[in-house]
Figure 1 (spheres, rainbow, N blue to C red):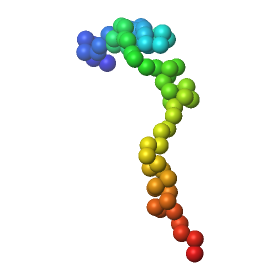
Figure 2 (figure 1 turned 90 degrees about the vertical axis):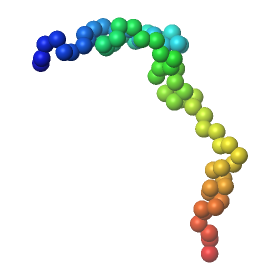
Figure 3 (figure 1 turned 180 degrees about the horizontal axis):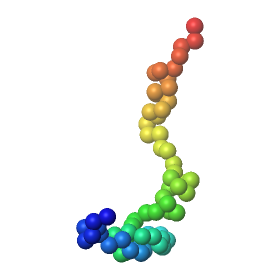
Figure 4 (figure 1 turned 120 degrees about the vertical axis):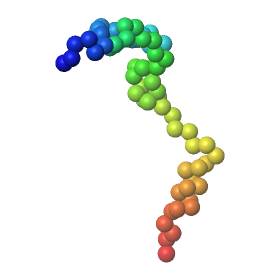
Length: 68
């Protein structure tokens, strides 16, 4: 590796808005994030898929195989 061209890679702390603290290594010392894997709805299983105005039913009705 060439000398004096690489950034300083040191211990870092990531603070989430939910209060989770993650210790890792990065080129930035401290980071603050708004959402992490412990509070994101997709990862916690609380994600809700909202069908607005019956779009799924209209699609299924339009492209359903017609019985002969």
